[in-house]
Image (cartoon, rainbow, N blue to C red; front, side, top):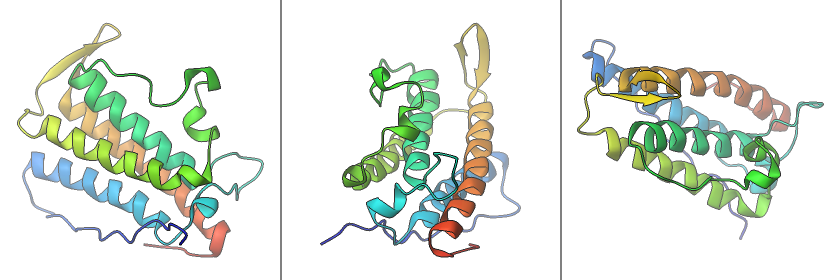
Length: 171
């Protein structure tokens, strides 16, 4: 049996919630939207380059966002000492370029797990909590806003990739 990315039910959040619920709700919606764009596709389809000459793929976006989740929430905010997610010998864009359709289910699961770990790390933290990275002070609020922007940008890419792949649009 060939693995296919599962269907993802996106939850609509409140349009009048307080700041914390609004920010985390929007991030959750964008996270789910990326996975929603991949639903029903096989590893081969996720890894297919559909907008040449760009090497961008849906699987590359999944891998990239797993790395971004890990870096911002676990490494930077929580200060965890973690190995690189992808082989640094394969270059800084290994998340986008070192793709194996046979590992798509594993890569998908890694993103889901990184999201879970990130949520657990920030569950009891304040949006005003800070950390220092590269000599600059950052707040958890800024991390959430950065992640919303990162997902939103890549969901736009995912829209184009999916439409070229099988004609699916919207949602």
